[in-house]
Length: 326
Image 1 (tube, rainbow, N blue to C red):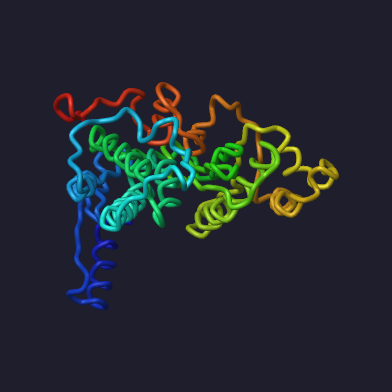
Image 2 (cartoon, one colour):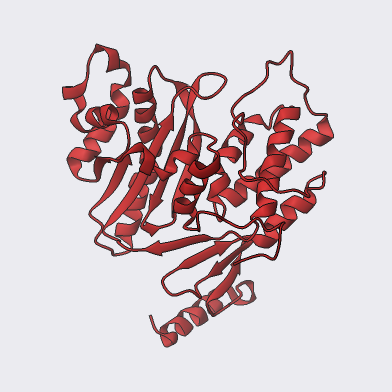
C-alpha cells in the first residue's frame, strides 16, 4: 500500500468513528501499553518498558535488586497445606493483581516469563508466602531487563514453524507442563506455557497431550495466514520425542493396548497430518528453544532458549549495574 491508499483508509475510518478514533503515522506506535517499533529494517520490536515500571511500582514491596532468571528451580514445588503460611487477604489481593498484570505482559512483549506466570496463575485463589517470593523473583528479573525487546523477523510465509514440548509430572499433583511456540523467522510470534489438565503415564503421553493442547493455535495460525492471501502450505510441528511422533503420524499402526486410552488425542493429530495441514518432524532436545516453557531452566540453558525466543543476545546486560543498553 502507498501513502495515498493509507490516507484514504484513515479518512474512511474517521468518517465512520469520528473523534472516537485517533491516528498515528510513522515507524513507532503506542498501543495498549506496548511500544511497536518498525524503525529497524526487517525487524519488528515490541517493548513495554513503562508498563513494567508500573507493575514494579504498584507492588507493595520495593524491588531494588535484579535476578538472572524469572524463577528458581523450585518454581513448581508447593507445600502441604499443613505447612504452608497463607497470605492475609490484603496481601493476597495484591498478589492476584500483580499476577494479572504479568499475564497481560507475558503474552505481548515478555514471553520469557511465561513459565513463571503460568504457574502463578494457578496459585491466585490461595497464595502462600512461597508464592509471594516467586512473584517477587519475576519482578526482580524484570527490574534488571526492563528494556529487553521482543524482536520478530519473517523469513518464510509458506510454513508456520511450531516447537512443541512437554515436561512429564513436574507439578505437585504429577501433571505435566506444555510449552508451544511459533516462529516465522526469528523470535516467537506466538508462544504458550500451560499446566496440563490431565495426568499422564509417561513422557511420551505428556508430549502427545502437549501437541493436542496446542493444536487449536497451530491450526488457527495456518488458516489465519492463508486468509491473508499468503500461500502457506502447512504448519510444521517440531518435537524431540520420536515415540510420540510415530503415534501422531501413524495413528492406529503405532497403537497398542498400553496407548488405547490416549488414541483420541493423537488420532486427531493423525487426521490433520493425513489432510496435509500438519507436518511433524523430529528436532534434537538441545535445539528445542520452547523447552524453557516447560520447566524452570537456569544459567546458560535458560539464556540460550531466551535468545531464540526473544531474538536477543545470549547475554543481556543487567540494567541495574549501569546504563541501559538498547
